[in-house]
Image (spheres, rainbow, N blue to C red):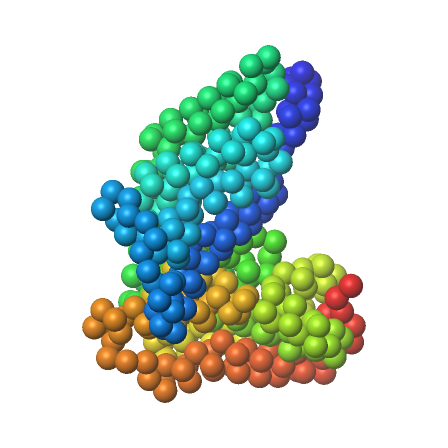
Length: 363
């Protein structure tokens, strides 16, 4: 047993919730952002602004035409796998081999590909790390093992994992359509909490394919956390804190939450209110990429995703046009209500002595 522990330590193979559930999951979201999300944004800019070189076909592969944006989106599997390998401190040969693993697991996982990539890439990366530099023909053995394990697990696991993820996501979306008020609260609060915790709400939404009303509730919850903390802590952190939390991430407050968990109450209550307003009043839907549902106001990706869905619905004839009510709903749910509600709840908790000056100061 000691020999095994020493081997794992030497190979930097750390079997833990933090390594796989936080580091790898968070990196996967970054891989998605740098491929699928960026590709979607490029396509949206090209279409909506009439930029011809962004909508022009740059390659035709197996009779499928690709623009600059769609080429980026098509690389989501490899991007996720490499990002996961990077988070696991994989050596170069393992890291580069994960490109193939990511492509295979994402393709075989279907619509639930991101979750399949997470599991398969972790196993393939750790197996590759275990064999790395253990032979004199490392240049051959390490890629063979990494890709071999990855392809085998992709064929074995990916369809089942992807199918299960989609069924779970479909169940959540079905329940939200059936009970928009209760599920609006539940999805908004839980995804919002996940955004502030050191895990990836974006990766979770992508893994389960959360779109539609459920995606809209997720956007509401994430915005409540980011805008809420940005506004509540403005006195302590100024404009820099407003931007870093409101357009960056509310995860910056995690250290302060550990010190005083009560500072988390206002944005959570705000998300419990904005979630059902999004689902029941404005019928806010995320019909863009599912990963956008878990991004909130980070780089305004959540809002871009909602707009992308509107544009696609208009182009497909599902929606007649983007209305003033659509814009009003987005503005209220994503910015105005989170700011006002969080500020009001924070004021009340300060009066009660639950929150004190300096509790949300960022280092």
